[in-house]
Image (cartoon, rainbow, N blue to C red; front, side, top):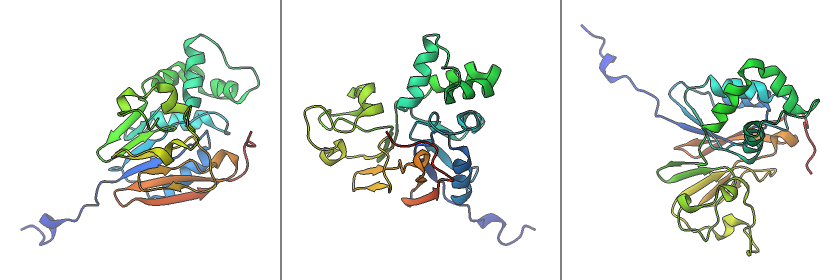
Length: 224
């Protein structure tokens, strides 16, 4: 005879964890995953810029490649690294990119192929994940330019940030524009909270729309 509760076990609801710009801050990434109490059933999404600027991009990429429930959108720093590789350029000796190349060793090419597979956006019903944002004058994400999706802040010919003019139906979750706090608006959520600059690394937990942040261990790079 089965236990009375065996057929009515309560399972945790499926969650989606969207993580802001990591920029090689592996220590903070581990702290954030612990803080959200990551589960095998969770879907993890990165808003891009997993690598560059920070102290341990190699470890971040290894983690990403070994995490089957992770999806990433392509950020401008990921793309910059990828394009140089596609052009056959090696990182400048002594740079953070060179150190990442050295640490990854024989797996460097595999890591670049992995980055090459990342899309420019991820749609999840009412939510849309991009790295930088959208041109609010373009009717659909499919018609957006890759450059805008990875770099836009204030669109050409406009005088306000893209998210102030955005009137689309989907909630856009993005990174790229480093701030001290998450940007929370009815239709846009900005998650880049300046971790590599000594701020915080932030995650958005769906469906409850809860934000969790962990403090950076140190200032790894000064803002330009």
